[in-house]
Image 1 (cartoon, one colour):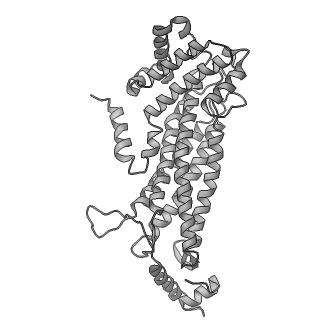
Image 2 (cartoon, rainbow, N blue to C red):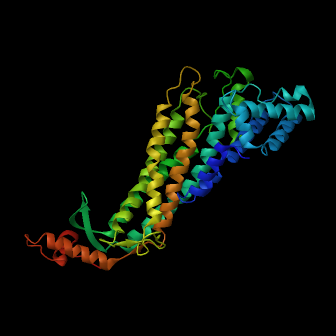
Image 3 (cartoon, helix red, strand yellow):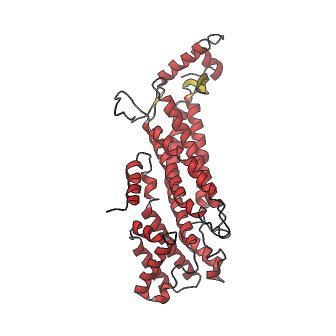
Length: 395
């Protein structure tokens, strides 16, 4: 029988994950992805120590082979064994040492995890997971921005009623609205790329002094970063968590950039307005006449989860002394959930924007309603309004 907590997580990933657009990002952030990243970190540490001359090549190869075997461990079992020590690295290292001992003896096994602390391995593994999740997220955000650019070009001269405080205000164009969506998305794409490219390894040892690799500590860090394709930090960041707060802030901004067009699409797709319609609207179990903008709705729902998760990471950003007693642990599920929420929102927004139908006739009708609101001015007709506000340019 499966563990209840594991079963529940499976339902969230498999039943609700696709609904919120999280399938692709879950694949690179789930338990197996994290376990693989932990094993990759231990392999790269051994390779880095060999490059620095601290262990022999055959020992590094034995550790790499053990890490490859450990990738097939049951994450649920590893999780249960993690409870006494408070993190999954402790039982993983015990398993790796047992595997190496069996194949190459205790002297070789002593090189497993040499000099490192659990936080080095877990922080670095989460950086790998974040890097891979950001690759997925950035592809979807770029797709969203491209779709917005196409809408802006196609509808640069399509007049529509602008609305402020949800009330009819003055004419604008749908192209201008779509261009605004795209500008926000482009901005967060640039920020996330910079953050992704700067994600660093963590390596400091017990209290961040590199003592376990003396006098070759900095050489080991440089080789470790090179092996993993992550940035080399200026010093260990066990208790200096700006790496995480910067990442959280960038993800929160991306979620907001997703929520803006998603929310506008939901509003404009209302039957009372009818100005846009998704290519594949959803139905209702009780009201078959409905055409719900489900992709935009679920993009909003995914993005709405981000602010609380950002707050969790900010609240954990002041750990005690050399390692946080609780704040560090709180980061792990919050970061994974934030990557999933933002990634899912971007994926669903891309679905919404792809093939979005723009009803120019409905926009014209609603622009006429704006003219009716302004009957007290000399600008009493939609054509006059467009001429006045948009310089007479009309499709």
